[in-house]
Length: 446
Image 1 (tube, rainbow, N blue to C red):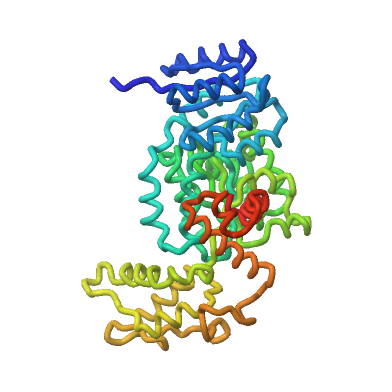
Image 2 (image 1 turned 180 degrees about the horizontal axis):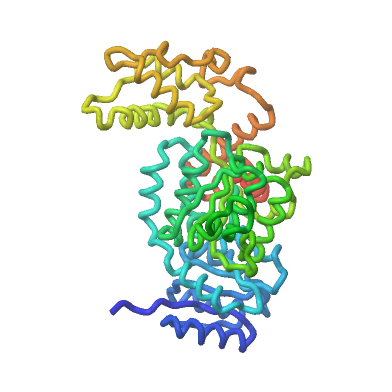
């Protein structure tokens, strides 16, 4: 018989503590209670917990301080924040600080049980990293940092905005976040927001009842209900028309949807991940994307680096693609001539990994004697450089972005060399810790 899991409850209101203790006790969980921050920290030092539930306002501090304390000393312990109704900004700050999820007062017991069950299903550390390494190829500094961030975000329920160029692998990153988290056994539902006709969007997202409009010959549950208990991945979310953005925002806020032609709302439990190759900040500034929806979706931003920022990975990726193309043919994979490898490393890859895959598939078909020469790649001359290691003006589309990339590479290198000790990395770069923290946040590395 396995030991019962333990939950730490932190709240200064006796009625709330008692409600949580009774509810979790009925779930066959052992509970420990603390009335304030200092009591909670003392209990954390004495006991090993599987989950922590904390109120935001405590007599001697805040729940946010407790989240930060747990992140620093017990990073594998999920912690959920309980906030006052309507305190969305507080809840978002908690998620950004590393909280697993949040609840609002008055506490909905069904939602509480769902949250607790989900948090206690988090996979044990170790296995996730191996799976990510196997699926997300490359050993460059940007990819090592990306894998660390995926591992961390998989242990949260925070909405994540995945930014990156077309073909860089945003959907793969979203799948990995889903598969390494507590919703792994639930559905992963990807949807390309730019591929749905505007007049069908409401029906596709929220479902419809039979006969609710011309052509509705049967009930359709919709994408939200299809993703219930799992993850809904909104790809190219910037392509949503403004009218649909309003309805999407309401569904996310209320955690409920109403089908077209339906009379009642249905509660849904989904984690939202979204992506776009567009600059969402610019879309908001141009009033093509609602600012309130942007804040709900962009709680945490995860940037997927373009292939030209990780040239050291190109040979590994190419080898993997060629092995995949040869699989099932009974023939050994084609080899890349050294000059072809150098040509690939000197190419800008505007289409990123997807372009590399298409390029190699074509070259694999056209090459002779199972060897791909540089000429077989048919690289577009305007995207080639004489020296992949030296940036010239043909490589720089935007000076600010280029300088950010240089800064990101140097900071990642310092973090790797100091085993991600931020203080030591800041000293190595001759930066104050405050300046280091600002740069990490600005570059999406925090």
